Length: 492
Ligand code: HEM
Image 1 (spheres, rainbow, N blue to C red):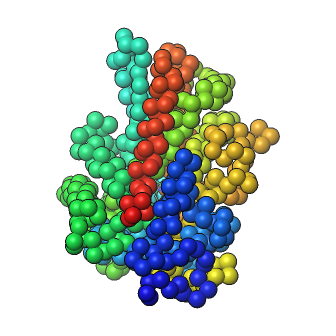
Image 2: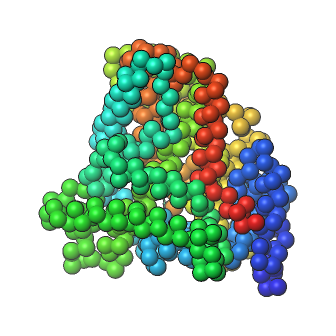
Image 3: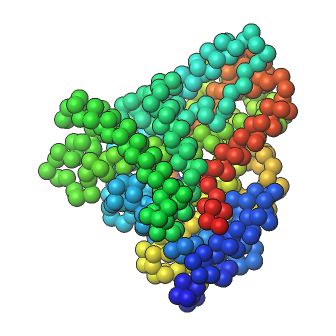
């Protein structure tokens, strides 16, 4: 009975039933939206049409407020809502206490985030030197592509899975600064780890998992609720990262840090060491950057290539711009960026498509606060539905269509204020700068491969475009579906 009572002046939303809360209402909307895309973000955007930009929900033990449209900005700038949720889902990953950057909050998080960003910059993050790192990785990627193309030349064509083509190279850019490590794209251990991560994202969602909303399932149904898998995968990632840390400790020299891991180890050794610093926290930082950095960027690029496959005219325009600005004799440089608005617009449109299917990492109200006149009690989970902004029909013309031109005004790139794929405010994405550098570069480079090689004008050399496009579309949509696992569907 108490579970069905809404707090006073709580944002409107469907009724809260005993045990399942609003789960049934969400399930019904998702079923109704099935053909239009039934992600959690779509279902709550649909609810916002009925209840207004703030939708109040309960799922299992979680009291949630989903912010849509104009409420997203207000929420992200409200520092009272800068916390991260508490509970098993956010703690099991670091064996019982909240650690890392993604899921910590208040002074602990502020101190750690400041330290990581400051020292990553020392090793090139966000600086000119990072362009060199990205360039190096992109070249390695092109070399691998060429090798595959040449290996298959005798056959009719090459089919490449674009969404997994970038993972290791993107990770390497970050990992060079973090731990001075570059992985070989054929590295078996890393490949296994990426498969595990993929598997993990299939079974959880950013807003939780079955076992976190109904904690009793951890004991009575650990397999069914996904709890066992969650623990196992985190354990394996932890062991992998711990091995890297042990290697580092063996070669670490005080006063001559090679990367962020060394600087952190130096801090652990220092007499000024603050209580928030620990070896577990260092491993948790690595895990967060590893997770946050791998899936997001690869999937965004995957979307870009999927849509270019479906729209050869967009490929043609990109190709024309690349040949005009870069030519056929060299590879792109970051300094080419201002002269390549169309390729940049493709990246932005890919980001819009990706975040148009996603919810961001949930926040938590650190204290009782107000949002758009409603009361948000302390400890409520508050979710920014960025998708509602990315797919807003009242703002974007035909938002479901892939149209890079929407980001170009008078021949220049123009980003509307509501385009916030990396969030806003104090908790905005830490990878934003890296993403902007590497996605543009990787996209331009992949597009340039065809120019340099003069093999074929199109990026994807498939002879049967329609079949490949359909296969690719199905594959990508499945990936995203799985990535943001249908928790509410699973609940019921
Ligand atoms: C296409 C690529 C990416 C997108 C669209 C993206 C988007 C986001 C969003 C929406 C948030 C949540 C903001 C909030 O809670 O209000 C976030 C947080 C975060 N992102 Fe990214 N991200 C991307 C790639 C990356 C990469 C490559 C890194 C690695 C450096 C990264 C590191 C992080 C971290 C550490 C946070 C947590 C920040 C905090 O809680 O203080 N992200 N990202």
